[in-house]
Length: 347
Picture: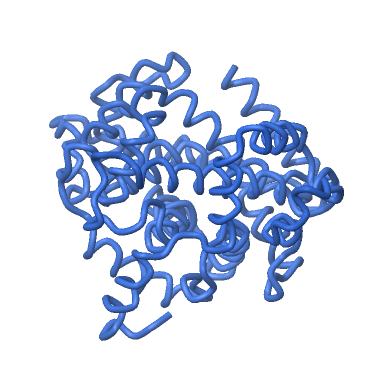
């Protein structure tokens, strides 16, 4: 990661760049209706990583499909397993932080929020968006995510294609201007990756949970691999806590400001959480917890209601966050048990 003196110029260039390895294929896909139908049908049949081993000949020329089932050269299997073990241990709290911290954090970036707003799903169907995002996270955090029986490669490819479709359609919207940069650009992708890695670790620590630097690095290494598979440029993937913090600070200073879109997305999200019968928190408690996690500055940007006299809410969340440790000798069994419990609670 670059020094802070030239990081703005560096990020300015990244703001104009999308995913050069996949976008030409998407344009071809969308320009030919029959070709698109065949590709979409094949894509719908992909469930596991092993399904990617047989790419139909007519799609085989798309290089990203061939590389989508390979880990980056710098990926370390042992560190990935440690990252999965960390996620499994804290999975309940991390999944809660998804809706209470990571997504609102993304909405505070005004230009990035515009893309999310224009795609409508987060605004009009927050339950579906949260469910899809949760499924993706469980897919890529699994101990076997990048084995042939896992789903990590397959899920990353599908999300990468989804991003490219959003890039295609949003750029043609009358509400989009060149001042915003490229939709779903490299800088916004880097910010989102940090929202699900570094910002989650900060959230855990804010809840009073002890997270060692080694645990932080293994969790971030796992998300770095996911980011790479989603098409994130190598020079936007921080390899240590210092460079991750520098990048996060720069993106926040460049883009965090009030926007109608960010506020609307936040209202939709909070309304969904408040209306979810499984949450069992009052609206005042939800608002206070989100404000506690985000901090007042970001919460004010998003107009999260300021609730007085509800200081017990963060204390309640801290107590709920202390889940018992599991037998780390069989992380796959523990992961499957917790995933099953999550799905049961969701349904």
